[in-house]
Image 1 (spheres, helix red, strand yellow):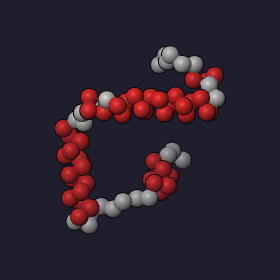
Image 2: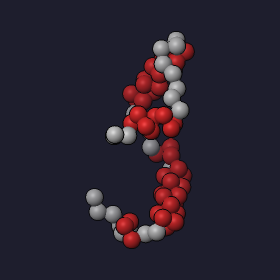
Image 3: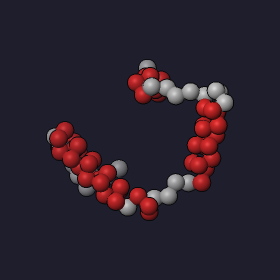
Image 4: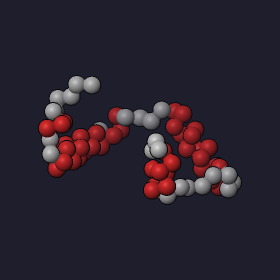
Length: 70
């Protein structure tokens, strides 16, 4: 994917600043980005499973270890 910024040439600080500016812009127009209908269904199913004791939350550090390739 070709980007407007030459990301490889940016410092870490510049990359973080660019991310913050992108996020701020996307957040300003958040109501323009509607979640797909299935998203509410998945959230409801997860909530139901949690309340029934059939699912549980996993700490973020544990989740990252589970999701990252070995």
